[in-house]
Amino acid sequence: MTQTDKTPELTGDSVAPKKAGFRFSLKWEWALSTAFGVLVIFAAIVFLIFNSFMTVLMRQEKTHVSDTLNVVVEKLNSQKQLTSTNVNQLLRPQAVVSATKQPTPYNNAVIASLARDSQAVTVYDADGQSLFATRQGDVSFRRASKQSISTQTVSGRKNLVGRSPIRAKQGNRILGYVQVTDNLRDYRATQVKLLQVEVVLGLMAGLAAAVLSYSLATFLLRPVEEIRETIHAVREDPQTDKRVPEMHHQDELSDLGSLFNDMLDTTQRYMDQQQQFVEDVSHELRTPVAIIQGHMEMLDRWGKEDPEVLDESIKASLQETKRMKSLVQEMLDLQRAEQIEVNYPNEVTDVSEVVEQVFDNFKMIHPDYVFILDDDVHQPLQAQIYRNHLEQILIILMDNAVKYSQTRKEVHLTYESDLRNLEVAVQDFGEGISQENRKRVFNRFYRVDKARSRTKGGNGLGLAIAKRLIEAYHGQITIESALGHGSVFRISLPILSPEAAQALNAKKEQTQAANDIPGIQSELLVDDSEDSTKSE
Image (tube, rainbow, N blue to C red; front, side, top):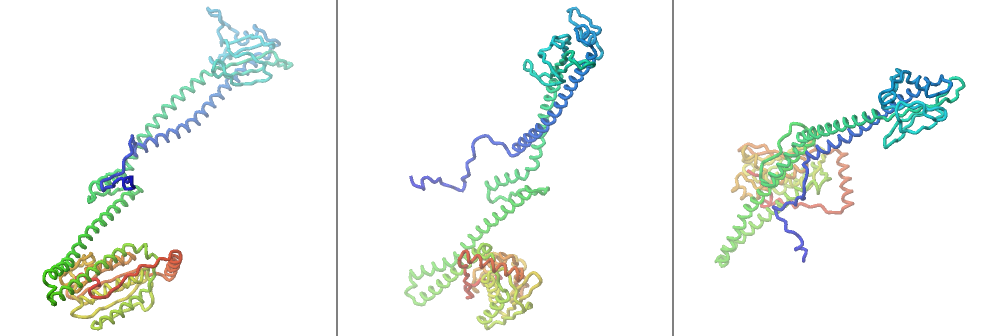
């Protein structure tokens, strides 16, 4: 299999294959990710609050156990010896035996106020024998030299166990021990309820965040949706005028929509220019090709036997060939003008010197014309422009002025400046240009009077080249004209300060030293049949 066989054929209708499988829209991704983020943050905050709250509850439980231990010790430490009888009398003085013969706890007001249903209080004598118990406990007895409260797991559940010795007030001898076991039932119930509340609040917060973020994403991502619809419309019809609607709020997505519209307008303009360029070139080349073909066919049939016809046909064919060469050269100049910012970024030119040179050249090659130079600057001024390009622009304007100043053979060249810009004006005293035609004189191949323009030479590209060149260097070209009185073409360029000119020259030298690439030299021909024409 050859490389050609391996390469799939690409056509204008081919599109990149879409990935199979389910996909989320950007709005849903934004909504779900926001909801997830809210849940994570909410969970972290709730975790801290929950731990703090449960710590407080555990501290309260320990306080209750400690209070119970202190109350029991305070009640019994005045005895000389602890027995089942006196302990029951002190802790349960009005014991009531129920039908099941089980003692009823918490008859004593002090014990009832301190003890809770979750607590089991057991009193032991000095030998560790049980003397009193509010209820049966599952925690085994253990002697303690001082009061202590700790957690202990019993039957898979955490319990809080407090132990304390009972010391006599007189002699400080140990009379017995008291042990309080708290099964933390209220603590666990509060913990479960708190967890349930937190889960419900978390789900509500996540749902609210998802709905809010989806609504917000729908509102904020409208430019993206509009851009997507515009892309689909352009893909279906490259010539469509659909654009992203203007957004009232100013943000990055609104800027993206504006940039996308500018890109579409630029692309559309390039497409229109390309189509117009092809049509214009086809039209312009059709005439000289037809003329040459006609003469060749005439010579092939019978004209080669007639020296007069042969001479006429050869001259006509050479003239049309020369005009085609000029046309190709001007099209190449236009193409080079599109790449000025890449090829000539650091060029600096003394405008005064170029203006004087072009003025002297035209005085020499057109001695039958009167050329007047009005120099109001009287000092060297520099601009960021390639010298050959500036010379080409001035030659185009001066040559057009010469061609169309047939009655009054006089051309004025004016050179002046202000603080920021320098200006060169070329004035002729020809027929002038109407207001309607003034708007189109810079179009490619455009001529106001095509029959007369063709006799004067040129292809209607001169002013288009001049306009493209001057605008590429951030300058301007304008026209003032009056029918029957002539026209004035003005070009304006920003003035470079000496420091800026020196910096650009340094960059140019560095670039040339690093990359020795010769510049493109434009061939400037001033022959009447090859120069550009003023579109009048």
